[in-house]
Amino acid sequence: MSKVEESVEVDVPVRTVYDQWTQFESFPQFMDGVERIEQRTDTLTHWVTKIGGVSREFDAEITEQIPDERVAWKALGDEVKQAGVVTFHRLDEKRTKVMLQLDYDPEGLAENVGDKLGVVKRQITGDLKRFKTFIEERGHETGAWRGQV
Image (cartoon, helix red, strand yellow):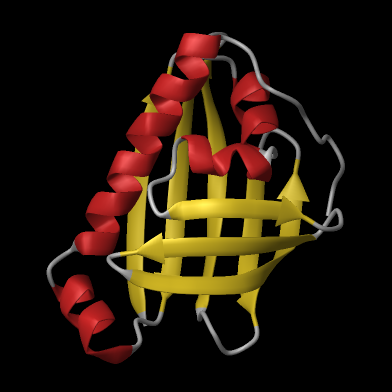
């Protein structure tokens, strides 16, 4: 298993940042390689990705969701082996630190070479920077889900 940990500070209140993160279907707007996400139930999402020429389609289960604090997930099935958590830390009334931890198991030669070269880490760093730009430019969330899992 490989592990990536990255964070970004966002100049938006924690509630706004968290609420936007719960809008999984908006991820393709700031996550490279994510072509589509469908929210099927409160705890089930369906992902279509293409990263480094490798296409994947899989379901992920939200295993924990605490408003303004954290969202944890794990991929279901054998196609993709990953699990992660995003935590939200209030720095002050208008700033939030977003921390992402991802455990994943690269498959095949291309994914293993990419893993050794730090491709996933760079991708996540870029995705978090694009999320920062996305939410700061809007100044408000596109929706919210305040339920708890």
